[in-house]
Amino acid sequence: MKTAVILSARKERDSNVPYPLVPFEEGVCLTDRTLSILRECGYRRILIVAGYESRLFEKYKDEDVQIIVNTDYEFTASMGSLALCRDLVDSDFLLVEGDTFFEKKVVEKLSSLESGNCLSMTEESGSGDECFMETKCGFVTKITKDRHRVIRFEGEMMGISRISYDTFRKMLQVWDTSQNPYLNYEYVLMDVTDPLDRPYIRFKNVIWGDVDCKEDFKRLKNAIYRSLQRKENPFDKENLENHLKQIFPNEDISKAEIIQIGGMSNKNFKVDIAGRSYVLRVPGNGSDGMVERTNEEFNAIEACRLGVNPPIRYFNPKTGVKLADFIENAETLTAATIQRHDNMRKIADIYRTVHNSHIRLKNEFNIFQEIVKYDKLIDKAGATMYEGWEEIRPKVMSLENHLNSLGVDLKPCHNDALYENFIKAADGTVYLIDWEYSGMNDPMADFAALFIEAGFEEENEDYILERYFEGKIPGNAREKILCYQILWDYLWAQWTVIKEAKGDDFGTYGIDRFNRAIKNLKQINIQQ
Picture 1 (cartoon, rainbow, N blue to C red):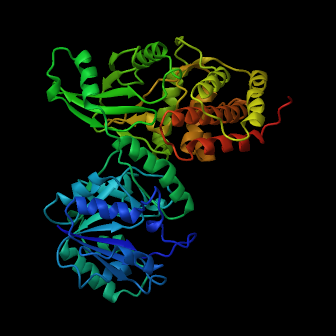
Picture 2 (picture 1 turned 180 degrees about the vertical axis):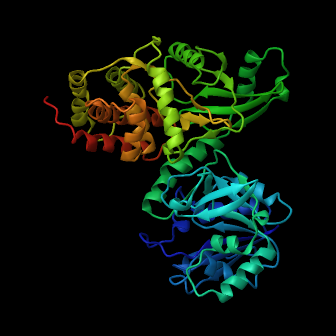
Picture 3 (picture 1 turned 90 degrees about the vertical axis):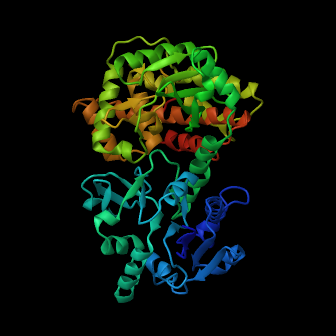
């Protein structure tokens, strides 16, 4: 398969330039990246269907790239654009939606298939424009954007598919007789194929996204692309092998297979050695002074004993290097999947297990003391907090007395509820990983982090709190959660300043959190 079709004709609602052409990194836009990946994967004939501001795509004309213009782009949808390729496609091809960002491995997997159709699926993104998929016995049975038609939320369709020539001809026949110019290609594909002609590949934990509006583009530029950069960053294999030699002194380390699997503040690697799979965690830039590794080791092992953390096989408190069991076929929860009712119930149960365990963790995680500590780390790094911090910091620190008046309940807490820290095993078990910032804290701090990191809907906040408190939510719970959300935002804004002073790049992550803290402070009446 050497032909690819990129659909980029759509008119943007809030941009004068098609989003596939807007740079998300210096000199690089979605079209640049997609073409680069396709060429690296051996595609020699690439058709770009443009419409809105089609003249801007002309620069991509080349020996292997042809521009087709959909002059009716305002009155047609994706099937109308695809149909324009009828005389230019004579074999199976890869269909790519031009507003989609994806890892190279998606194209590699689809391209490795010898024949037939194949759709790509991953976890629900929560973008608001998801195309949900349902499957049976390895084949797609339903595609819909209407969540009211979904019986089982199995995943979301990615805008990259392998289309057979035979299916394409059938799709064209339907299009030629259709009375609806706004048909989307995926629904036509469903109509002309039997389930056995709709196999799929499920890509777990893949970094991807699509851009339909300014908010989507901001997420791509400042979050999705930064995650891919961290995942694809070249790693020092020799250094990793030295760590592995200490962990496995009796094994031939040269036979170990090491694959980088991402991480926000650390670098994580899947390691296959001696017939087993593990996750190797190596601390990232700027971790010194932020995390007390002896505390993490003690707390993480206690979490293992509670059954909420995968077993840890090695921990070096001096270097922070950790080796834990790799959970095969696990799904990393997303901002959307973490808000499914079955997952929320399991997370509420995890928090109850941890908070009510009566374990005395090795340290107290006092956010106010952490803010003071991070102040010193910012000075040490020669960095400066965001503009306006001098006025905001006293207001943030005044929350200590306010929380004390509401009542602070110190219990074992995780304190870092990124949705990526919840992983779901194939048997449905949900684990809470990465206990770097764990310590004694108020349980509402854990819920504050959970809600703000995943952008919880209000009804879902109610649902999980009802489950956690068994229907008896304390009257002060929501006020405490709001206070802790402000504190987390301010603290992680400081964290970003420190990390970026050490060479990392998190886009607008830090300033966005700082500004949200300022906004939420206005909701609390504090007597200073």
